[in-house]
Image 1: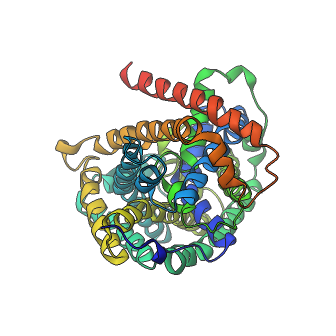
Image 2: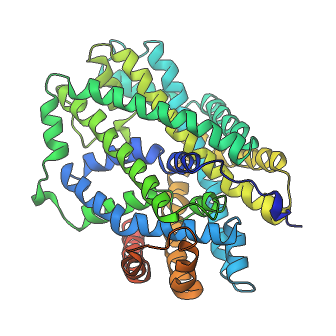
Length: 449
């Protein structure tokens, strides 16, 4: 039994939508993933390619997802059932819902780490520690299964309580508070970082491209980071777009969200790289350990490091929370629209499922050999492959099944003068599917080679 569409929730304002959608896009991928990949791939050159990929792939696909969502006023499965009734296309929506649930399950595990690190930093746990001791603290925590499960549960609970409040009274209300907090905290950290002695070396690494380091791997990694960072391919933007009023301009909405997401990612680099180079012996190519192993060493070596360290992990937790909300909402919207569930029931049941599905990821980092590497495998299958496949089929569906004319008709409801419509049509028909296909091939090649 489907829910009555007349009772469907919606955004209270365009600003509320932009902040919520930006919050969905802004997450661990921006503040952890982006600096990590930039550090591993040569700094400024990676940043330039990333910005180009956001323009040529990220923004066009986001416009496509928002257009599909608003046109159908439904969840990811309902979109394809309404726009292509009786066809297998609804399986793309099913993939999005399943992907959202699985990503939420392990995402809350990693997000729980940020809560623990807020407490550790405030308590001065890293003060006076050597680099080896900092690394041992991280290893000791993530291998403590019961403790990781506890913080995982706390993060899932926080997410569920917000989503229960609804689109306007929960998601929009909370993100309009959290997003300005996130931005102010990040600016504070940037100011601290760029004024450290020796910060100029980090700024040069981040702002001066070394084109000799540019190769196909850097380009494809930047493309993947741009795609994943914007929460594309799993139905989050379809879901958020489905709550948009017909009066809201889809083009400016997509552009504002993309600008906000990209700005936070760029600022995260300004917060991390100058500080990284200001501490002797640290390098930018630390990989995934950058945030939980390298950064505590930075905070140990700068004035007021304990305070700024706690602020950074609070920033990371806020970014993770605004993203986990959207992941949960994808599945909750499906339960409400397609199953007729009440929002509270949907949020609680789906949250419980995400918690249980996340337990193997919580105990697989040294606590249980049975689930060793579970989080990494889940992230590869759903955080990479499923998102890429979902994004590819969304482009193909809009461009070649539903059709560009219908999409433009929906866009023109609120923007009669979409001057770049011909360019967008070419991008979504040819450039985006080609780029995403190459990214999929490269991702699978790296895994199996």
